[in-house]
Length: 140
Image (cartoon, rainbow, N blue to C red; front, side, top):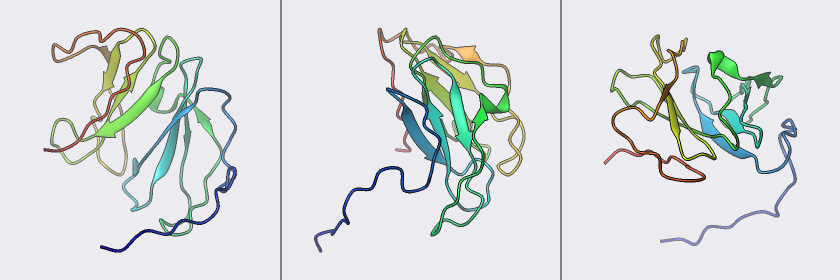
């Protein structure tokens, strides 16, 4: 197994928007075009989205959008993550927030043209986990 080699750290190498303190970024190919777009949860609870308008190997991010896909802000400190929770081939969104709730929105359209349904708080019998929920989803 080879040892990875990393370059020097860079501050904001892609010219992304500054969303302030305690931001929580995540990447997902939300539009199904083969590259990763960025979503950033903000301290005040809002989500910011910037589409990768270039390629996976040479990303260029577009103008930031505030609360995309009609996603309402969380109470504070939103932490988004994406997964195909219902197994229909598109990405759904989970947002953790400071009060410990998980907010779920199902993608009711397609992988290349997402339309998100009504937000549901703590669906599927998931419990409030206390302060600062931070969802991480993976396939087993």
